[in-house]
Image 1 (cartoon, helix red, strand yellow):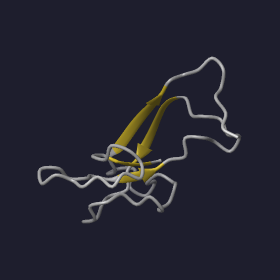
Image 2 (cartoon, rainbow, N blue to C red):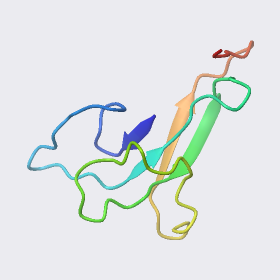
Image 3 (cartoon, rainbow, N blue to C red):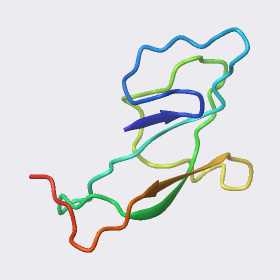
Length: 88
């Protein structure tokens, strides 16, 4: 899953309007190594756009740990479940 602050969804070919500007990007795996869907709030530090207008869907899947003092934080909330949801 790719997220840019102004992008609607992962992999979208959405073009920014003239009054919009992407402020960062992050790749996130919604399923962990056991195939369980994330739950609760997940905070991710965005990578800067550096003049590029598109997110980097094939970039690292690690958040921006280098910029932890200056990076923009994106918090995504997943609905908590009584029974975990798995992907196989």
